[in-house]
Each structure stands twice: as structure tokens, then as C-alpha cells.
Amino acid sequence: MKAAYLTETGTCDVIQYGDQPSPELAPGQVLIQVAAVSVNPIDTYVRSGLVAVDLPKPFYPGCDAAGVVAQVAEDVTDFEVGQRVWCTNQGLLGRQGTFAEQIAVDAQWVYPSPDGVDDATVAANALVGVTAHLGLFQRAKLQSGQTVFVVGGSGGVGSMVVQMAKNVGARVITTAGSPERAEVASQLGADHVIQYREQSIADGLAEFAMEGVDLFWETRRMPDFDLAVNALADRGQMIVMAGRDSRPEFPVGPFYVKECTLHGFVMFKGSAAEIAVCAAEMNQWMAAGKLNANIAKTFPLSEAAEAHRLQESDNVGGKIVLTLQ
Image (cartoon, rainbow, N blue to C red; front, side):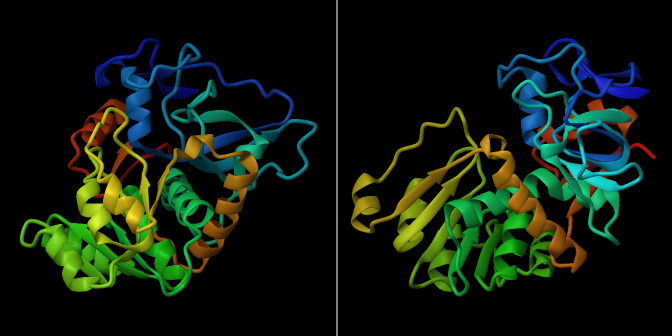
């Protein structure tokens, strides 16, 4: 089979493309014939060595995949050959990644693909959708009628937060760096889009959320806690999910006087049971056309190195998908 792989960490150029042996199934696993995978920032951190983890050799990058079941282990009863499926949370914690024509995945991380939704969309929504779902509903317990602010409403996680929050009846404010990205965010359901090159985020929030926001979702690597705490309503919540090397100042006094809460999390520490809950609701929304992918660029798997290079440019404006068929 063909695969994109690396034998040592480093720049994008360490990613090779070529023949690798097909994986052998272990008990409890599903063999997936992969049709599409997506690129996430965590993939680049693992490939570069920024996140130091033990990797199998060779190692296939990638957390997400969508395709068809090619084989199941004897003890797996939830899936059958020929069934369309997707997976996420691979390529982490010692697990092999997804950038290959065939992958062997523990069945607890595999989910049926929704009817009528193409593999590229499913793969693009996987990790970012689970991330948004965990943050909004497991951590922040978002309720209908609350106001959510998320930075970057056309980005990977941001686009998921916008749609999921709207799906449960929340009011959503987000940001965009251009009129084109603002239009995308609006089409995804955002009630108000702050074009931060024309209006400061602080001024936009003061205009659109005069009583404060109930949830402030920060996607940037350097959180602005003064901005966030000032924008939060009493007992508001904030989520951070990026910036592992950031050390910003924090306004302790205003934060505790407002009785605010700060959540930090990474999706790959979610349990199989927790992520299965996310996947089930995501499937319902995707099937109903209420959770759409903002795919910015598509490459063949053979151009995985170039896809990583684009991901690291911070100028993506959506998801990167690699196709295998």
C-alpha cells in the first residue's frame, strides 16, 4: 500500500511517500480502506518534534480518516466489511496515524459515517468537531440562549464552534480577517462577525454583547486574558486550547470578582466513551446538513509534505484534506 510516513521528526521535508506493508489486525481492531484524511495543527507538532512522544517507525502522521471497512477482527461485532466509517484520535499516545491507504484502528475510536455525507467532509469535521463538542457541552455545558464568542469563525475548530452553538440555540459572535472569511462565518451561522482589521475585537464585543458573553472560546496561541475577562459576563466561562508555550499576563482580580471559570483541554485526552457521545451527535448534525466542513484546500496523499507546509503557514482559512481515491 502507499503511505505518507516519516522515520524521524523534523521539518515538512521529513515526510516521505511510498510503499509500506499493509497493517495486520490485532484483536479489537478494524481495518479501514482510507478515502480521505485531514490535517490538524497537532499533526505538525508531532511531526516536528514540538510535542515529544514515542512514535512507531515508520510513523504515519494524521489523526482523522474516513473510508470503508475492509476487515474486522474476530472479536469486533459493531462493524462489518463494506461499511462506511470514520475515525479520529489516531497518531497520538503511541497510536499509528492515518496517512495511509489502509489503517488498523481500535474499534472504540471508529464510528459509522452518516449517509449522504462525503468522506472529505467527514474527515475534515472529525478532530475539530470532537474538540468543539467536548468544549461546548462537556466542559462549558452550553445552554440555549447563551452568548458565545469564538475567535476565527471560519477556521477549523472555530467553524465547528459556530455551527454547534447555533444548533443548540446559542447566539454566536466571531471574528474574521477579511470580508471573504466574514462571509463564510456568516454562512455557517454566526450572528455577528467582527472584522478585526477594521474594528477592534474589544469594540466589537462592546457593541454586540453589551452585557458580556457567557463563553469566550480562544483559539489563538497567545490568549488575551484582559480582553477575555473584560468581555465575559458574570459567571462567564473561557476555553483555551492552544499556545502550549504561552505565558500571558492574567487579570486575577477581575476574573474572580466576576466569578468566572477557565477551562483548558485537549481532545486527545478525551475517553473513548466521551468521544463516542460527540461522534453520535456530530453524525446526526452532518446527516441533517447542520454541520458542514469549511475545506480550504485539497491535496492528494502524495503531497502530504506540502499540505503540512500550508498548515504551518497560518494562512489556511479552513481545513486541509488529503484524498486517496
